[in-house]
Image 1 (cartoon, protein in one colour):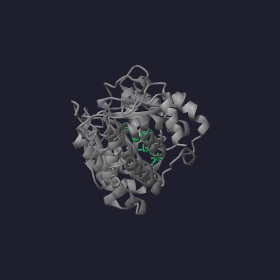
Image 2: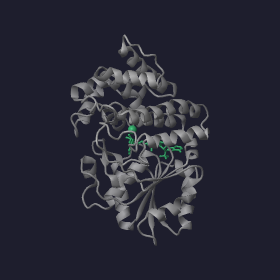
Image 3: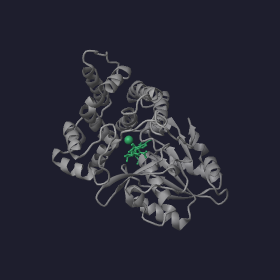
Amino acid sequence: MQNFNFYSPTYFVFGKDRELETGSYVKRFCEKKENIKVLLHYGGGSVVRSGLLDRVKESLQKENIKTVELGGVKPNPRSGLVYEGIKLCKEEQVDFVLAIGGGSTIDSAKGIAAGALYDGDVWDFYSGKWVEEALPVGTILTIAAAGSEGSPDSVVTLEDGMLKRAAHGEVLRPKFSIMNPALTQTLPAYQTACGATDIMAHIFERYFTNTKDVEITDRMCEAVLLTMIKEVPKVMADPNHYEARANIMWAGMVAHNDICGVGREQDWGSHSIEHELSSLYDCAHGAGLAVIFPAWMKYVVDHDVMRFAKLAVRVFGCQMDYDDPKATALMGIERLQQFWKSIGMPSNFKELGAKEEDIPKLVENLFTKNDPVGAFVPIHEKEAEEIYRLAL
Ligand code: NZQ
Ligand code: ZN
């Protein structure tokens, strides 16, 4: 196991109706105790329609907390709204940024929080500069997916060139995250499935490692995957299944606050490869991952057949073929793809709406920042092109 530091200071507030306590948590985690002003940041309207925004406002009013609002975050959040939010925070002297929504809203809020205390261009942070200072961020999560409610990351798309990039910094971990699984019951089935796919992908990015003897995190990763395989079909069959929603929501946090990834080299190649799809086609990140991950797995399986076979046996219930471990490994990949298909995820470019003729552009965009991407097997241009082709 590698040496590591792990500090995940987000305060999680989990369960039914917990959003009614929002005001008290803003007060608790805001440095100022009087005359607090909060930016309420949200997406395209689901939180308005569900009445969540009104409930949150009421809770803030009870604590005499003032608010300014900025809605309209799109999935795959854009830089334009981040710049708008930064301007608003500076003009209004906002003390705290509250994201109400999914990963896109939370990531946009984190970008705003970082930019509000920075004199330069916020895009510097999405071009490699570490975020050292930011306004405090709190979240009220409405979809189990990206894990941004516990992560130190923000992913935003620069409209000029449609480049989707990540910013990082420990200060971006939310001060608190309110997680009421019942809020996810209004999700369309497709969004639920995209979120589930992303959660599983966050585990795979950590599971495929070159670090030896990491049994504890291997087992934790496997536990999250087994949970997803058991619980997701329940919510596909019954969107109001609270207990399954609760398990999935917590799995989404555990999959990405890095407790399952400490002490081991992580990959993240498939996420980079996918981000080019969701920025070019504006598709859901989870759907893009369902197409890319099996292709990446097939491309790199020979690098460590036994690790893939272990996943196949422990998670996908395959019988180990000791004469042909690769057959077991490939069966595991096949079962993963079948699982994603069974919950309505696409499995190739065509089903995603991606085009073969765009592959050169996807590859070109992919390497504008890092070369190679991924660590389990470093992926350069030639390999990336082959992975996109395997996903056709
Ligand atoms: O905008 P509204 O109207 O709220 O609708 C959203 C949106 O259309 C809808 N939705 C969310 N909660 C709902 C709901 N509809 C009905 N009922 C609810 N309870 O769902 C749609 C998708 O929302 P979005 O926030 O985009 O989903 P997700 O959480 O999957 O976030 C995806 C973004 O996160 C990034 C992805 O790249 C993508 O841009 N990621 C962020 C990470 C991080 N910060 O750590 C890591 C991830 O790997 C990922 O890259
Ligand atoms: Zn992801």
